[in-house]
Length: 257
Image (cartoon, rainbow, N blue to C red; front, top):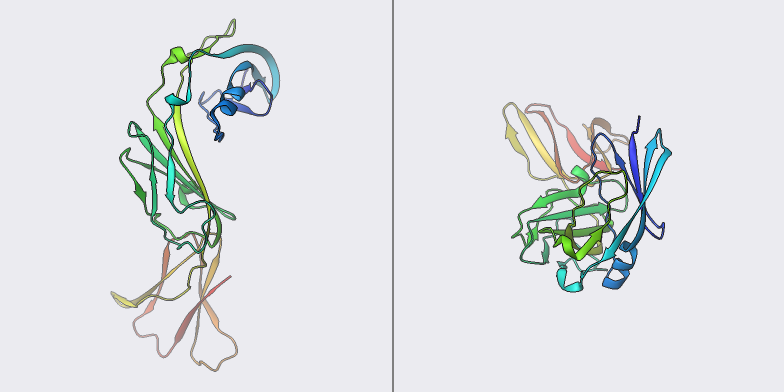
């Protein structure tokens, strides 16, 4: 039983696996110069059917130019944070611009370590020009991309040959991508204002992805050791802890590790 297909580019530099259960996969590459991108696309591709990861049957097909030009793609840009920027706030207001005929916009954030909620990806309305992440960005290097999904291109501009004995529908899709890499300043760890919640008091504090926070307490500020009340995993959002409204005399702190 065939469990997947693998499609390999003409120069063999990349391949894409497609599971038969979904029959859907995609992979993107950034080529700032249009001829470099088309050089990778045009030529003889290889389609292999796989059984338990081993090649079962192999087909080849041609992808060739039929008038596709740089005019079919309008540039996108990230206005803030710019590439190489430093000292960026953990909650930056990201701004961007791109083709007005986009059908939807996708935005993705990746920290040097760890991962943001939902893989750092969000879909935005096509008219969006700004985005405020719903979580604190991790201190250090961060990657950002914005992709504009464009209406399907004219299929007559790229010719995709149908391999013999293989039935499929070839669709020429378009998008344009802007990319930025920047450095986020460390988040100031501070306990935010207290609030009353029923018969308890609650405090909040910001967290970073991949960091762990120990909420500790003591009854004596001169004590050499503190006891752990709760341990919380950071995910870039604001977390909270609470205690009974009448805990006696206690002091609390949050330690990041």
